[in-house]
Image (tube, rainbow, N blue to C red; front, top):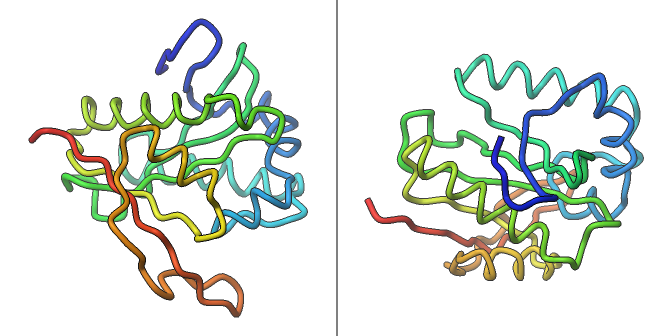
Length: 176
């Protein structure tokens, strides 16, 4: 567990008890619009697929990669690393989401800061990246407040459906 304050922490997902909250929090058109692979509407089958994916990724890499963000022990969002460059790399990319009821309260900024500190301390990451769709100004603000710097635009970086999407790339660096 990554304890952030008396109310906020980051833990493992608990498929049996988190499923209902996951579906409620993530079944939001804004989450789907601002992420690459989360569908809308988000169904029970999607949640089952996600929990299985998280389990398989953790087993494959031998470390936890995807975590639940909790407020007063209730699931409010998720955060994870992609292991984009391999498990032994000095760098990785993160992704995250938070439920609508918990936005604009500074909670995601705190979670991103704490998660990055954890990745640096536990996994030796000295470069953490995050790509943000150009329309997602809130996420850009989260990253900036969490100590990330904007490194520039990556054109047609992702393909979502039939659309190519530009991404603004952010990075946070730690001393080596």
